[in-house]
Image (cartoon, rainbow over all chains, first blue to last red):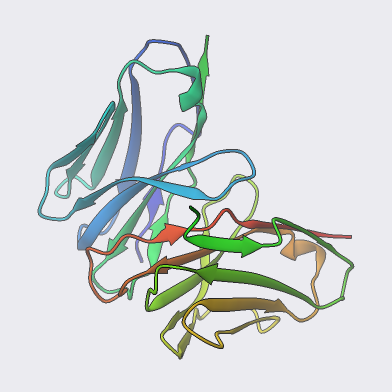
Length: 113
Length: 115
């Protein structure tokens, strides 16, 4: 059974610092891995999706990498801003599932001015 | 414009009183999902519909049911809510869950409180 882990559970950084968020998974047979943002009391917003054949995806200040062999994905957020404060979740789609995303519990990020 | 709409945003119900949560989509997607997310936990899939085909997760309690009367709408019914059912309920859609490339689009969620 796929297990997805995000460590640390919480992170606080000063504004301007680069953020590095980690996601690890136990089953490397995945279709893709997705990063989401969740604001308090809100739903999920998809940030980036990396296909299993890709090594990374970029969108603006966000860059996500994928290393299936080591079971890891990393989300980088450059030059963090207070508006980046949120919980970031990763989720993967394993090849033996049927559209079922397996989520990590998330990393809660606070960017202090 | 919101593409996956959940109503209501906040729902308060009494212990044991049936409640229905609503999800609608303007994307014309084949697949609709319901997730339960408890505080500081990962979202957990309850069930999904591929068109009219209902797929229940093995560990979803019988207390949870779902209906999809048409492509656009999907409902989550909780027959007898318990205190442990208080959570955020997230609805999501994807064009076709069988294809690994498809992104799941999430609604804003309904936060359910049980008194």
